[in-house]
Amino acid sequence: QMRGSIPSFWSQDISKMVPKPAIMIDRSDPYAEIPAKHFNNLMRRYGSPIMIINLVKKREKKKHESLLTD
Image (cartoon, one colour):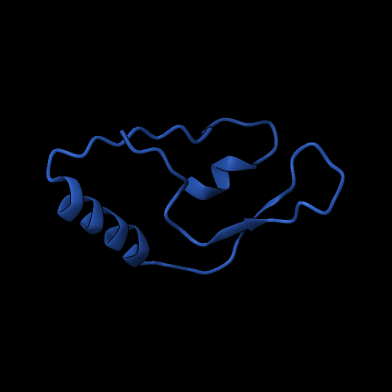
């Protein structure tokens, strides 16, 4: 089992004293090159099948995690 974060360029400013710092998308990747490299590496390392479970929230009162799935 491997657990990890979203293979993309994003960040949060943790210096602010708020419950949830805003998520900022740092770089556009329209062809999903970074996730492709990540999953190709997983295939080489572990073989197939690779099962992926998306735990990112889709419904939120204020967009936070769901920004990463748009």
